[in-house]
Image (cartoon, rainbow, N blue to C red):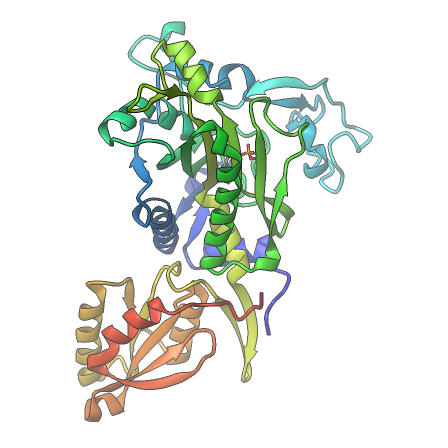
Length: 452
Ligand code: ATP
């Protein structure tokens, strides 16, 4: 039976219990809304990152990769508008000394009476809203003065725009073409929270697609469909995804169209990924501020400033969506099990190799040989610790799609059982065919048994 309503607490608790993600700096009392990733969290992140990179770069001829610096020239952020405009309106409460986003009071909890929102409790004493810049500042070099002021990037996109000319020349591209980048971004969010949904440092995956101006609307629609398709390809349920187009009042002044791909998180429908038609704003602004012309000049001397379509998402928001979508609890026989029904190409561990009896020398030897063979190509785990039922449940909780068990029969006929995480079906295979079986299984289409 599929669990339909998953709470953020269930996800946080599983993540912690199984070492995916845990609160950062815990031995120093923690640092609110900051998280560290453990072994399975790192494997999960690597897989999501790799699937994005395959779809956005490796499987295409029209997109190249880039890895730009985190600390860029400070003028970049003047040109981009972040110094002036990357702000949230803030209110302080003189009573509890907490600070809230003026436009998100409804989502915040009063510091004295958490059942109320700021401003609702009789003791609340809120200031007028003030603008607060979300960029983290730092200084570069040994002297701290205004000339050494720099910022940690709040998005990866600007690193792409300032390299437009390099890529055009060195990668010999012509529009339509894209530049993709994955890397950490930093925002001094006032009200971080909801686990990884809003954090102060996160890993963004952004792609800027440069197109002839007349084609921008078509490409904008194309990228909304492509990105939605990517989530479906990796198993998110269609019923939990929707596209919400921003009205003109919600859009940035330069945007010619913005759509959010939203997921129905436990906090309600919220932005998973944004797809924006940014027009020529960014290239024009960097041309103006740097005095380097950022334009495309065709073979016949025709020139124009390309328009830009940008799909932008963070790994963190994908992780939360995928964990929520995958989380399931069911009763099997007498026992309850928690299972993460992750797509096999997303799951941190692809297969577990389990000798039925840890002290059975013959079984251990065969299991280790199989493990050594599979680990060359796949993320696999060898586990001989504890009763077999407990080992299966441990693998279910981290979302391992298949387990190969080496038992008595293996010793006589060289076959193993393969157990399927979702259906719990077991079949026997020759041990020599496991590697090919696993390669095939990963090629097969996968759909979540939780429904559409
Ligand atoms: P929001 O309105 O939720 O603050 P945003 O519209 O400011 O998001 P963008 O600037 O469009 O977000 O950033 C692109 C993507 O980066 C978002 O769709 C989201 O996936 C991710 N992202 C933005 N801020 C955060 C954050 N604080 N924590 C985790 N991911 C984030």
